[in-house]
Amino acid sequence: MVINTQEISALLKQQIEEYQPDFDYTETGVVTYIGDGIARAQGLDNAMSGELLIFENGTIGMAQNLETADVGIIILGEFSNIREGSVVRRTGKIMEVPVGNALIGRVINPLGQPVDGLGEIRTSKTRPIEYPAPGVMQRKSVSEPLQTGLKAIDALVPIGRGQRELIIGDRQTGKTSVAIDAILNQKGQDMICIYVAIGQKESTVRSQVETLRQYGALDYTIVVTASASQPSPLLFLAPYAGVAMAEEFMYEGKHVLIVYDDLSKQAVAYRELSLLLRRPPGREAYPGDVFYLHSRLLERSAKVSDELGGGSITALPFIETQAGDISAYIATNVISITDGQIFLKDDLFNSGIRPAIDAGSSVSRVGGSAQIKAMKKVAGTLRIDLASYRELEAFTQFGSDLDAATQAKLNRGRRTVEVLKQPLHKPLPVEKQVLILYALTNGFLDSVPIDDVLSFEEELYSYFDLHYDALLEVIRTTKDLPDTNELNEAIQEFKDQSIFK
Ligand SMILES: Nc1ncnc2c1ncn2[C@@H]1O[C@H](COP(=O)(O)OP(=O)(O)OP(=O)(O)O)[C@@H](O)[C@H]1O
Ligand SMILES: [Mg+2]
Image (cartoon, rainbow, N blue to C red):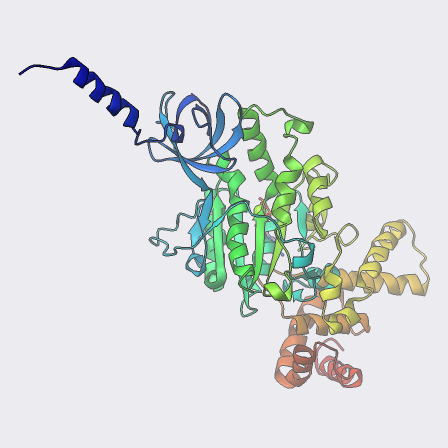
């Protein structure tokens, strides 16, 4: 056989011309740097911001810094066996989490994976964790109340569905308890609750889940947790994962209450990963976009218009302060984005006033319009009364001779403080709140000794449950006060037969 070299070279040429590489060379990159929870990789030229990437060992990452030479990646999971030189693959997808009814009653991590040992979560629906907030025309003003069951909140700083109310205070001032009680009170209120625990101890989260389970609140609650032992990228991601799950329900026309406990820890986690990604540090070493971190999150809470189903996301973000300093950087940022704040003070907490809400520095900028009529009538002047009582109290500490009017004001103030106290995990339905506040503002408690106010309250409720449920029913259904003569008579009748005469 004669070998024709020309024929062979022509064949080779043709082969080379027709050669089609069957892989996309831009789809993979090589890790060039690996640090605590972050990596850099070269070769991912087409990666999108926020794109999901997969490392050799199966761990997922998220593209963050897109630079000319390389891409900064946050690693969402185990990174101890990722090495320089490891391959990282693009997926072409933006980071998503599973959403839907299957998540209700579960404890999950920010990636949507169960951590409660109850098996796989069966849902095929997902949502991107970053999503634009509803625009101006897609929103509606807040008009329906969200009853927390806490007298001090529902009367003084009412919250409406779709509102964002900041809960701010030092450590151990009962912040988490306020949120847990508010969740407990949503039973039978057509609400889905999402509790996002960020940077908390596993044991704390565990006991909160147990509380929810014990009171039957887990039936309508999702717990998203990124505990203190998790790498900072997961702490940063947790609130976004939570709100993505909430949006799924909101756009179906349902109502959601979401609690971010707490955003200070998220900001710290974000600072950590930003510094590792070598973003320029700004004030208190936070990156320049730390305001955007929280604003884009909280803007996603809304009451959407009727065309979109009229659903809502009510957000209770938390901020932990140092020594009551609400003018710190992150605190002022979040105060400016939210529709009001509830300030919990440690001196009140330690003196036994629990929940330790400081009426003077707490406000609700929109919730008042969502209060029911009966509550508006009885609680109208409560805030101002309480503030003026505090002022008087400080002023009269030294004096002795007080005129009758001042004495009466002090008297009423002390009883108001007493009535607004509430034990843990005992949320109160709104009609009973109205009843006790009505009795207070109409002077029925003025003759009751301070130490007896609590038992007066409890006995009043049971007396009404037994004999005057019809009056409570009027408040429940009409949302307005019943005939005041009847109400006065009923309360007086209760007083006459009790030991509080
Ligand atoms: N209304 C209340 N009545 C009685 N005890 C309460 C009340 N609220 C909170 N506590 C108790 O105070 C303690 C601290 O409450 P909680 O954990 O809610 O505070 P926190 O501000 O979330 O704390 P941390 O800063 O550690 O997260 C808990 O032991 C809780 O049981
Ligand atoms: Mg807490």
